Length: 116
Length: 111
Image (cartoon, rainbow over all chains, first blue to last red; front, side, top):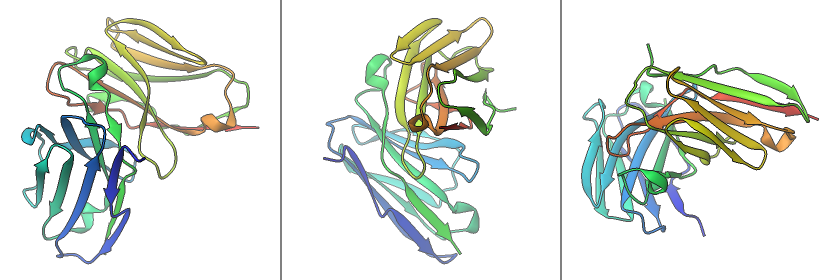
């Protein structure tokens, strides 16, 4: 069973379109994250939700909007896609946020987004 | 200047070699230090987790943290071709779950 899953795995779209990426975790974790990995492999956090509450909101264009319908799901909606949005987007989850082993973040397989 | 600096490599070593991977950081608030391994077209997976300064060993892997120098290392003994991957250091302070990653070092172990 996949612990953290993302759909779709690949997404090719035109500039200006709106798209969504879905994430689900079956680990019973309380916290979920979205990361962006650019072409140089630099992985940077975008958002984090704990028990459906937004707790981390990094400097990200407001075209990006996360939504957490429940603890097991965290979706990412992107409006008016731009060329610079092309990257791999990773979802992750962890049991808690306060430190220690509960901090271990488990990553999904990634969604490769290409904006043409 | 990035909060976490990591030489992206690439690093190529023969099978059986000892590999040393390093990161430096500038934020003295970091207390938790991790190493993730990322295979091509896969998500990162946690290899080692260390709190504060000191050493931690797990099989062929040893993680070292020197907070006074703001320097962390990962050593891989008896490296195998299956160790070929990108290795990412990551660290956090006390803020909620916010991991700051290094750029990653691409490692190739050739037979």
